[in-house]
Length: 121
Image 1: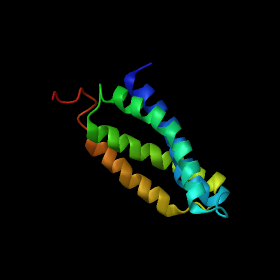
Image 2: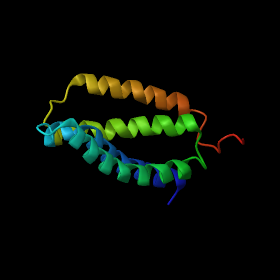
Image 3: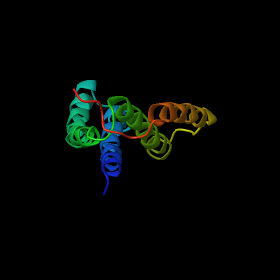
Image 4: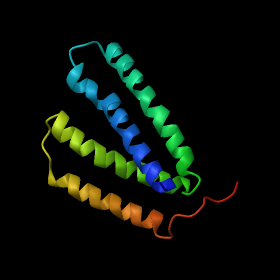
């Protein structure tokens, strides 16, 4: 499996944990004190970091830091929208499509010279 594919798959997995850590408490723990929600979120976020840190290290062998960041933002949007609609039962709006198209523009500009090894330090 290629570096980019491994990085993408790991970032998707970490993003699922991140999304639940950041927003899941708004549904599941809304009646609990914020400190309980924060502690549960931190426990979930641990799994996110256990996947995200190695993913970025692997990805950095082939992609630049701006490429990794834009990739992460696109993955965040791709994970968040289904989470919002399916899990949080929020309506899907056309604005999400337009926001996604703007982010695709960012992807184009960051990746238009291709994926190459990052500059040496």
